[in-house]
Image (cartoon, rainbow, N blue to C red; front, top):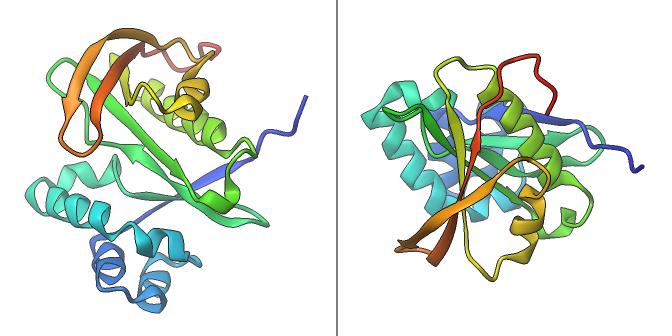
Length: 175
């Protein structure tokens, strides 16, 4: 069995997000307290959305906008949730791996860490994932984590997506 990468998430503060949006990697790195990457800088479209979300709902900051860091590899991508649990206790997972770090187990490691975070929160009843039908890598990533297809939706950014749901497990329950 391959070594499972140890993912550490670094929350991206509003100051860090603003620096990334402005294209200032040095200021973003300083604000984050960890070396960030060009990949995060290239995701400015996402950071605009997340910064506005935090400004509208400061409590969402603990759920969104995190750099995924691996010792010895640096920032390998980003992950989090679309926001805090909704009225039914559902959170939607989101993760992305930088192209130069793909196919090394980082996506599964990120997903595992995010599911552990969701499972540890008593407010979370289920975790949702929305994936384009042609995104075979993401579909493979969620395999084995208990997700079941529950429907489809139209996303203005990605087009048609399959919607998957996984019940939350109580803390201490095996994944």
